Image (cartoon, rainbow, N blue to C red; front, side, top):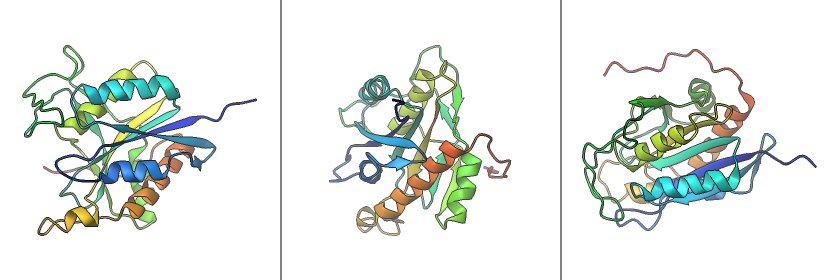
Length: 217
């Protein structure tokens, strides 16, 4: 009997005094769902340098995925951000959940300066916009734990080119945004449906679109 290919979808634990993290709330909602002949398996990562990659590598070994999408919170953004590039540096403005605060440290000493997402991000962008979701291509995933995970993911899969992988940032939930003057919030239900659209597009797209989505600064 042929096994069903797996999509590994990760989110992060609550952090910085929050009781929830919408990246995980959305990911766990899709756990066990079938999308275009694939089964979604959700895993939660700690907001911690080192420990997050240890958990991610364990999830990769356990699930043997055909596709990996990691999701993280980018409070202050107003769109679902499809990340283009991960850079090989940790530079933490605040400590992580375990009190670590690396500054100007390589994620992988001697590793490449950067890795590009292997997801069809332009097709995902078009699909999200067509479905009415606020979306953008982002040129930076920051230098905190999200970028740490994104880079570590792409490094782990660098010799497994048959596995597409990448990172998506999402805005605050409305509940989080309510406590921050002027902040934008996107309901978890909306994020969940947007992720469903993204995963379907990745599974069914063999060649990405050529669509202008760059930035001047």
